[in-house]
Amino acid sequence: MLNKKRRYTDYSTYIKNKFGFRVQKISINAGFTCPNIDGSKGKGGCTYCNNNTFNPDYCKPIKPIKKQIEEGIAFFSKMYKSQKYLAYFQAFTNTYAPLNELKQKYEQALKHKDVIGLVIATRPDCITTEILNYLEQLVKDGYFIKLEFGLESTNNKTLDLINRCQSHEDAIKAFDMAKNREILLGAHIILGLPGESKKDMLSNAIAMNQLPIDTLKIHHLQIVKHTMMAFEYKTDASGFHFFTLEQYLDLIIEFLEILNPKIIVERFFSESPEHLLIAPKYGLKNFELVHKIEKRLKEKDSWQGRLFKKIM
Ligand code: SF4
Image 1: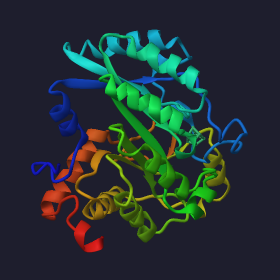
Image 2: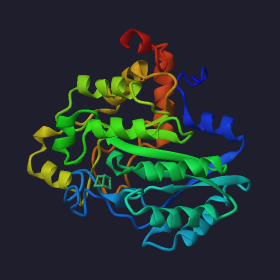
Image 3: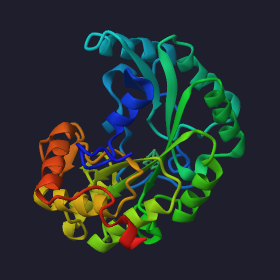
Image 4: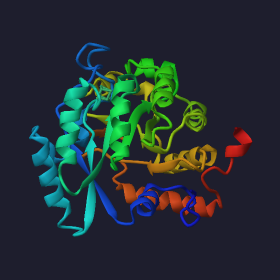
């Protein structure tokens, strides 16, 4: 539900209302690979992909999942004594393995008494009815299960350009298979991909409204080291356009105005570690950008979904 104080439907309020206590995600690198890296779908991966940008120190190199959970909890419990945890299977494609292997990995995390559920990041073309049935059973057993599908764009031309090796139709199919199972369904998109106009980017918001999405993470395009995109950028930067901070704030406001107010927005921004980031460099933390967005929404007297009904 739209948070009147915040003018958009935010994830932390959702978690607070759902659980009534603090819940922290712990990133897990479970040693999966990706069909866009191992050659079964593509080779070399998405052009922007460098999985090192989101692996915190406690999950590298790959340690047993039990140990990653224990170390993650030891780290976060220093800040907040009483909280529960979600195991965040984040690196690479976390449903890309036979079901038995998935069960074994997920259940290692769920064995810890303070882990109350899973957040699983994956590609839309890597989900099966068999996996969904299993996840649905975990929900029935009392666990919180969230599936995060990386869409990145809803424009097939862009998906080709970034070597995503999936189509928007794959995303539609995945959401259709996964809906109505009490699994929280998330999507992830990137704003500022090469070749996309502002109109293309805003049309992602309309496409989100047409999917059974519960949560959305929005990121701006970042060029990080050791990626194909870094090479493309170095060779010819003319195909890349980076927003100034002001432009990005305005784009997010316009995006939010179109977005269904029922969609919980989990992120607007994140910046890769300094030593990996090539461009753009805003030097902001997520909470600082959230503050700026809230301020801009207030100044404009606008809110998430302001134009939702008009555009639908
Ligand atoms: S971004 Fe995700 S889908 Fe693309 S290559 Fe990297 S791990 Fe695979």
